[in-house]
Length: 213
Image (tube, rainbow, N blue to C red; front, side, top):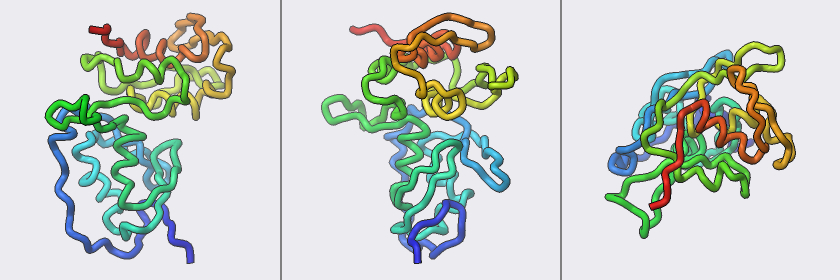
């Protein structure tokens, strides 16, 4: 009998004591829409933060699953497998872009947000940690056109943009040095593929990098 299941299915109840959330680690986390898929593939879209992930995912059935059981994440475009006791961390790090600061770079134990979706060596990945804390918006509707010419309209954020453009707009299928014509809302600016996501973040999402010093 397989020891894996999709989050939301009924399994052996978890009877372990509820761990208290480390609120101080997530006090600076920005609110984002939950893109977890429910019945019929409908996105949840409830606003969540790293601090509210444990409580929120009780509504998706996570607490009904025994903590040692492997689960399949149903976040839009993900489907990664992980053990149930690592599921909350998976959502925080992969889908909300949260990672803990190292000891030499900590401030009152608070976490910082970076994207974990970029492939190694991408310029956008190298610059991710320098994204301004004063971004113009937490999440927006993607205005990139679909293959049929209609506007995408998916909800995206700083944390989800990499996975979104890889899965829905085929960006990572291109060579890193390929020149891409941005089609966001009629932009048409030509950039190298390895700089494309940075262009989207800065030009269309209003996310700017901090200057050194």
